[in-house]
Length: 266
Image 1: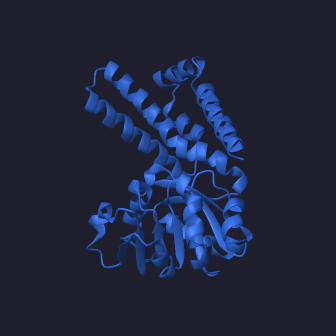
Image 2: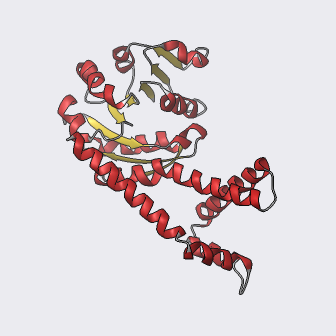
Image 3: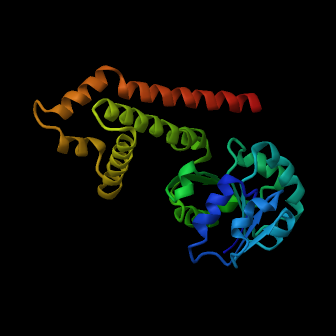
């Protein structure tokens, strides 16, 4: 594939690093206003660094937009006449809907929205994607790109706000749970570095068990809870204090907030 990442900031750089080791790249254009921030890629033969968005688009088949939200509309207007009907347009811009993109570039273009999270930097993003009618034949190409950077799920655009909470904001929620586990481990006698290592690797192991087995979390919980044991007593105390309820309500609150922001933008 000939890919261009328009606006290679933190997200764009992370995507470039994830794509480089794969065999899917024919060429990768990275654009940025100040190109010296991309010097780490200057010796990569497949990468072209430029500040010219139009040049990158003219030489690419897949265009990934990763610019700041307040710059996206002006960038689209700048390049709209360079966009061909066989281009695949992928937007990672939060809150910028497909109809809003189509209003600028036209409905005949294949438009895909992607919502990755910050774990894309280590190839572990959970990325949700949706598309317009013109992109249905190309959605698999978008999935293939983001599968190299973690896992993907195709969803309707109506669920993108919820996906932002579950996956993008979700990174912060899981970080807070890991921090709490770390604090508990310190209280139980481990030093801070040991405590964090125990917490984060145990979290990774729990997730990988579910990914590998496809089991429901309660099936794995049953394997480590014994009658009158310490695990079930700890779990019950957490539930008495509202662990599950607090997490659910926090996510619902985030969802309500993101919807209120969207309404204000309309």
